[in-house]
Length: 325
Image (cartoon, rainbow, N blue to C red; front, side, top):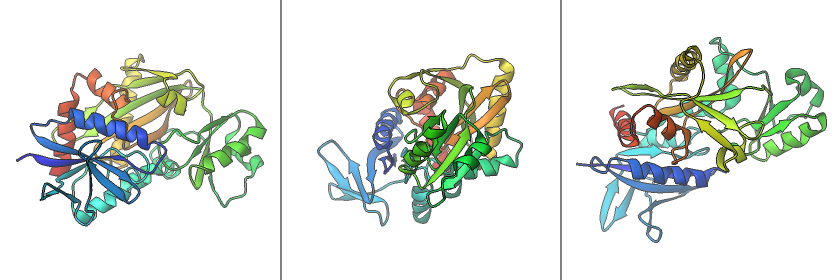
């Protein structure tokens, strides 16, 4: 019998529209001979199974099921493709843990940890991994420009601390730009991370370690027309990706080995994407995305294809690994 798969898209972050596009791509590439997928659109407490544009059915959150033609259908697995809250920060994972519904992402703890950029850096600092200098702030903290510049210098990147969104990120070059940039980031999140700006190449590597097989995917270089990979570069075509990246073999090995190591340190599950900065001083960990995009143009599908795999088999392994765990 086919397993019924909930592909969860939407969510409450600024990237909800992107998430729905990713979810549609996942449904298109799931093996329909093995699985019966349904799009579950999540917005706050409003969860609906979208049978079509016209037909939407409320999800019973007591047992994660829905009624269809008089029959109660219970989901066998959750394929989470919600960027930001509640799909990337451990909230959905905790819910599914309570119901004992398998899911395709990291655990609730690992999701919550990696969603917090500063906490992730503190965690990795103990493992001899190169990190950019930073300064952490909460909304209640006084903005002390002198202390911030002393810690990270200028130019600096100001970003919301929680999540993988490109919203609210600013490259600050001048002193008088710093406070407005911090306030802008606080509009997205109650915590802000300010980091030294490292003029570097941006490289990223996808990893999935399943029971049957480990995928350390080809590395992608992100070449932005802007000075860094902001929202415009990410979603509005102001960047191009080169997969596999045109980098020396030794650097490829270093990135793949480090990506495998970070995946294990953070106790990841499912597919993740790990981002780096590389310059003359070395290779710096930037951040980890535990619910990477899966739209046609997203990086993980590019890397899967560059490795010679197809998305149908890749998604089957993600689901089967989740159910097996």
